[in-house]
Length: 637
Image 1: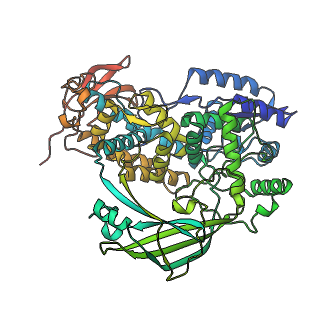
Image 2: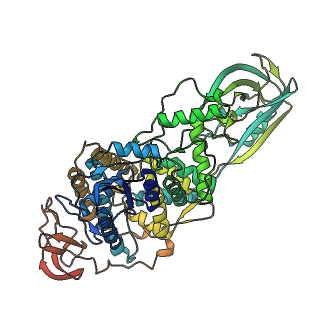
Image 3: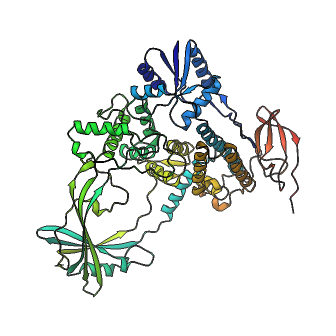
């Protein structure tokens, strides 16, 4: 008798079966085997989802059932995240398993797999509930709101998404900022010096002369006068020894950002390359938001540093890592499973280059900080026209490369000063000493609009605002492109298209799920379900009541909301396919009742009597049939 191990990926199945050897067989589900029926919207009060096996899912289940013959034990070893946990639960249901064993591998290595197999657990039901809540909530929002957009415009390809739409709003609003931006000129002054044969420079602190409400001086005459300052004296010298810590190891979001920027590929391509690396056993699991290397990983990196003669770059103690707020912390950061492997071949160029980035970031994160001697010198002078001016000179000298010995182009940490990132030294400048500039420069600059979102910077912004989860970012961006709401150029810059603008215009005035803070709060509530701090039905009812009220108050787009290129193309009346014949404003949608499917008005509510519509029709081959109930409750008051 053998043990059957069920995983998601066929590639991974083959590798794991080879590791486990005799007595084990491994098969793959190839992802989800089922989904919510295309027309089903889970309803109050239970919001119980109903799953239907896909055609491929039926084939998968038949194949797994055949593989189960002659087995003594079954282990569900789908991916170690919410999605993987949900797939395990659906396999349990479809195969009618009783309390199956659940194992999860954070890396496809013999040690990790055998360790997990030796200590199986049960399916994490709260984690499944959190994933199910996300799935059902997304279905309710998409299926309830999308028909409103379609019927209000006549464009049957418009859609709304709980997370997709806030991401689209970011792109639309950034594009408007760029279009509405008015540049203005400002002036910067630099004085050049030579002291003890060492050239150095000081920059004018224009704060006292800045234009009102602006961080710049916009008066050229003042700047030109300051640039002619004949002499300055040192008023303060601040010397310090500073450390620059290594950038943290990559997690899902930063991997997408760095991978997209450095490899010049889409975030979807980055995730595909990472999936290939994980399934090949080259890296640990690539869907994580915990920027911490495990003790096992850290020990392996330190051993490798000793082997290559870099023992002096190992820190004396392990520094406590800081996790970002809201991190689910399911498993460690992304790292190579064998740090001594410098290159990965046979998986394509993207995977090979991404591996190198992941490896270097993991190694550097476990090395000593780089050490600099820094100096900040403040100087004061008086211009020819009598204006008092302050100048600042900064310099630094690299004393110990630390982690920077591994990277030719160090990654600047957030908050670094541009001048401090240079290795330019300053001469020894004594307090109250005076210096005459060799030359003064007055440069005209123009303010710049905010940069267009690229796929990488959009991911960074979505993460900072709590929109979606890192594992969903690439899919969100691809959906926006596939629906032709945004377009991307060769530099992966994202520009909204007319329909994308229209969708945002209609949603932002009608629905809270477009608000960034609201989106973040929903993610927090989903986390609470996973942590057993909130009930699935409680969240779904809360969202149902809110969305139902907003749907009832939905208003069609005003002329000012319609992009010029779409004017004249919109229908003046909603499509009759969705309009309720009783109240003339609600939309009909297909529902499932105790006796089967029927069609009901979106303005029906158990909780409200004010304007609630009771209109229903039978279902005939997926379309509204005969009227079964007609009428709208009286308006109160």
